[in-house]
Length: 181
Image (cartoon, rainbow, N blue to C red; front, side, top):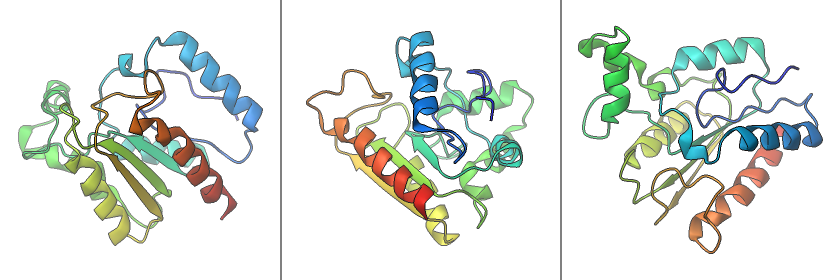
């Protein structure tokens, strides 16, 4: 399987197929890190259900890891910048809710791990809670980790000694268990 380019990868969604070795994953992560000084430099955009559908059609998606995801496109938990970008792309304000990924969750949605910080000032933690609820209702294997502190965009850098430093190990363990099932 050919790795997707940085512009093709939905933000903060890690897709690993069984036909990629751990060595290849490490190489891809190293290439990605070399291009970006910080994971927070990625453009802030909504991971739309249509993108997930396209990705799923092209590749066997074993699991998804969503970190501080924008899920709500309307209401008090919506990320204003994402809603504005959708509207700027031609989406009518009255149609924004249709772009909330939690509304597209069904039994075919891959097992999903959600990671968020309760003190995230950019994307309210309610976004991850909404997605987790939708996954559970659809019977999709899912797990949610909410850290008390960490803010938005903690990623892999500057997390040493902080509670959020546990997320990579939690994600690795969860992913390996997801693929094994």
